[in-house]
Image (cartoon, rainbow, N blue to C red):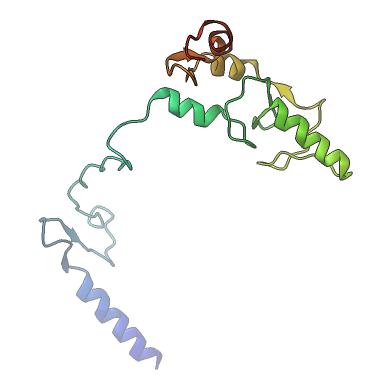
Length: 169
């Protein structure tokens, strides 16, 4: 039985040692298989260069504005809104607005449970969560539309506009 297996194995090696395999009918790419040789220079594979990578396919043709991309990145991980309130972050950097952060702390205190970040489940408390001033300032510079006159203002200016300057309120 082992003699038959040895004969078959030797026969296959001889047949494959000089066989040329056609890779594609569309191109002239070929591979030269040289198995069983002792010369490492003969054991090389000859392949034409692959085609360039295709561009990423987007769902729509219009690229998203920077403001839209920043809004999705800087939003609260709980309510998914851009807050004008202080922004807190857990030790792993997940962002929470002040109202969601305080609500989360109060809920867990009522249930007598340890408060954890909803994204990464690390423990959070008032002492180990920090305000992220960079995110707060970035959010205040993003544009927002007035609910009354539909003009665009910075988030830092919208309250003043709506309470004092907007003629359509």
